Length: 289
Image (cartoon, rainbow, N blue to C red; front, top):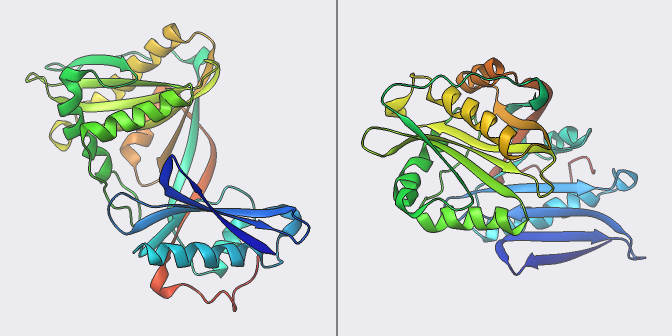
């Protein structure tokens, strides 16, 4: 088995490893996303089903954790995407810290009523945030950071206009469309927002990127108003869309109720696992993937 470290020149914060056999056939991959601030990194590790339980995952995890430690990381977070990967995580010292419920809204059956909230008005845009709203949007973005996230060691990343533009440009670079609906208070400050990414084809299912209301404006129904208005808007703007996808932490009961009231229905669940590098299980004693 050979490990080849890789790096994306366009995204220096993303490190990768490819495991291959002596004959060159690929066995598995590992990815490490380093944060711009803080000590918690996201990871993804995948081993071909035919190559599991042969130590491939363990070797990849060794390389990944060593690199994370070299970059000053204290914690790793991962969300297994295939059956059986949960057992690998537990055997290697990860612990479950969060449960997520994935939901879908079938647009052909959606008929949301957008009930306005007195004292606020809605604005919509696609792509980059308009210049006159950029600063207030950057101030509003941290509202996503205090949503219920179980025991996950998420660390807030700093927000500024440059980061907003970077995200919008990345979506546009994939040929997708970032749609944002925001609620403005009487002073013109953003009190809440919801984001949706439309696939490049304009068909199939779109993906919610996040919905948040600033603490001072919660309890008025802004989240439901924004999402209902956005649903109506994208149905008209992107007529070939089939549905909207969302994932919500089980602890986030308020957003789960909002989505349910709009017609979102559960499709599946997932678990988030966390590894404290200082207490990582010894790879030699762990069960190989």
